[in-house]
Image (cartoon, rainbow, N blue to C red):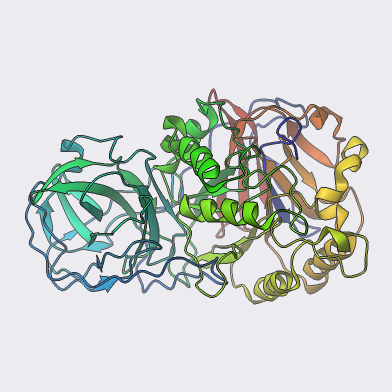
Length: 551
């Protein structure tokens, strides 16, 4: 949708059984600013579970410059400022896209230390062992000149995470660690990644313990000493297969460039979530056409201070919508050079684990134990508008559709979360004038997918969408076969409000609002029946709506 009329929203669709109920937490009903909800999302369960991490990324998204990482040797244990290496016995993990440095794994023996408990998330302590060293990155000066766009973590699994920064210094070191006491830490990963010629750094850190809250930092080294650092980041690894912890995550979409400070994103960062979902329109690049212009938009957006407060607080999973390329762009007609520049810049600026066989594929999945599986869709880049009204409409490519339905059928997760950048619900009235730009404009494939979910008896499906510049929770259809499926649009993170939000009718639309927000989810697979609590938080910290849905 256009910058003027589309909505920065993450839509979340929940496939509920017809018998599934819901309970309010004090949230208002359909009113735009909804009656105030009760207390903000409860913190998830305690300690981290052990076991081998099996992280489930499937159909991993798109290529990356293959790293040539060599393995790090048994590192010296010197304190901060002495260039201390990784613990003895560390095995080399692979370096990320564009980086050539080798990475050190965990492996060191020694005293154990409990990881800090996730503030409101599911990660607990007790899962980190290794040699404790003197390490206090906060004692080093933070250099926004050396690290001009901050840091990010993404695509976390039970044993790995992608780290990102933009480096403008001389000698770079990346560390992942568990703080054990003031000035002390166990270093689980150290590497010396070599940035791309433009300074982009992607580090694929492996060998991490499951469901553990960890910290990371990029360090600038000179003459053997650490002399400056990036911001310090936090992430949580996914739980191991076979475990079912409570998981707390958030999401948004549509954050328009130039509208900073992004107060709603600040509120999301304060939640210390297990992970975050970026449902598209993360940056608005409509005026960009060249690689340099796209890079300028991206770097300014993700490096903005309040955006960084969110990105530093937890790892994320990202998809794109239209404005990463151009407003309502058509894959069948767009200039190939402009598309290539937009795609290249997307991958340069985000910590996405890319598939060397399919460089531009972003559809992929990640498991969080048996609690939930995240299916990240590409609802823009593979659609064929020329097929819209035919019996073989392709909103998703056939390969992506086959992967999605096969993966849904095979998933053992209680909740199947589909990150879908544009809504799948029936939006009535004036919204019909733009129906060709969403699932409704490809009716045969939409019906095929919804029929598959209902007819196959797949439970716990949660669609996540954005694009509309409004927040809402609604049934996919007001009645009928698909009337038990629920969708929630999250966001806008910060964007002009879609004035049509107030026209959305109840009872189909239980909640709707044009207020910028982040949405927080508390998924409890052990409740009877399993539940997800959905809450919308405004930039001023107020709760716009909160309700618990049973599956």
